[in-house]
Picture: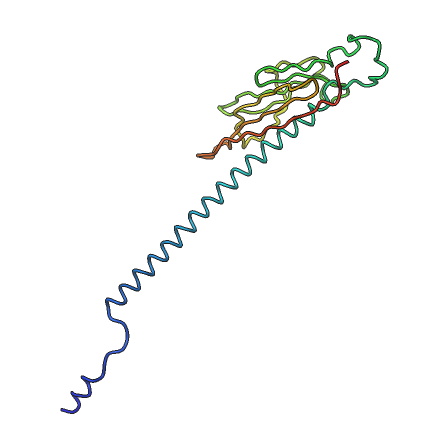
Length: 196
């Protein structure tokens, strides 16, 4: 009889089945919350990277346009042209702005003195093109692609603020990325040479 009394006094050590179930449920809730937080942070990071990449691409193409446009109206030996009248500049004075296009010229330019920069669609995607030649190329002339193939250019505009100051606005979104935001980059360029 004594042996059975001793067994009754000994309590079982450890967790009950209900306590284990509650601990497992709480653990799963914590792990699920951590996984949801990780996924949310990863998606936010990917979105920030896409936005930064797009801004960088738009800034780069705007900088290329700015550097070339800054040289507009340059005529070699401009001091020697003083007093000869406007005909001495022979077309280098004009900067023509139309919808999505700008036409200008400067002497000693690679690929030809006369240039046009325009936006056009190709295969459902917008791109910025620089056309150059010995005569003024039209806004639809073929030329060198300035924008990245990874960016769909949705808009390009030029606004002449003053005789020597032009504002460039480039809009675009990443190509082939679902839900890609559209961004706009605006930059002003001062044309170095004044009209003759």
